[in-house]
Image (cartoon, chains in turn yellow, cyan):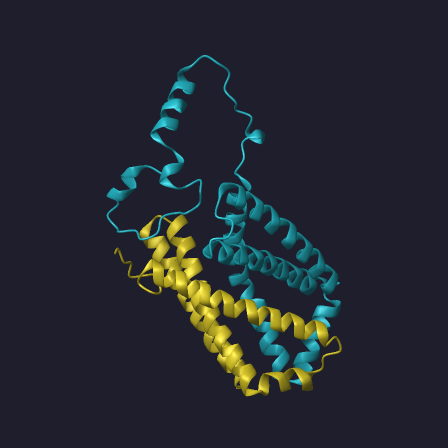
Length: 115
Length: 162
């Protein structure tokens, strides 16, 4: 099996599975948030922050944040390896993407646990 | 894609999987027919408006483009997430922007549209993974359904935002 040091799971099959599992988690989270906003038209701060104060919602949101990180990396790795042929430009772009993903992950955790 | 790509110094695990990029897309037979067509005196179709990608290729490319848009759009989503949970004033600022600011509405609709398409095209991928519609006709049919369903969702998202 050919492996590549820059892909997430070090193998295409592993990335394939990570992409599907994270996609299902993000699909469920998207449906939940959209349904919550649709069924609570007069949403206020107390209800909104109350939702994110609950343990199950923090677990669900953290799971989704990790899924975004993995899903974005597998997807953007595929796109950058497909279209950016010069190695330097591709690796540079991928480093910027990794940094952005890391910032989003830390930012999300900080919001979730109310800094 | 030429076979000589294998001679590249770096090992590549993933090539482009678009139907138009697959090695089999340009067969020797079709290259031979292209060669004959180029060297014949008969009229050649150079009307670019009649040359187009098949629909499944377009939806596949759009799936990638919407994915990149959603990643960039995370900045706005995270801003709203952070601000709305920071304080009652922050929550009011986000809901006020989404209720009155045209640019905020446009960004929200744009991101919801990209999300709708990416979501539907993703479901299509999952269906193909469980062997549903993995034929040429099925591929075209599912691409058509993807376009129609996401168009409906994009309109509904617009109604929701405005």
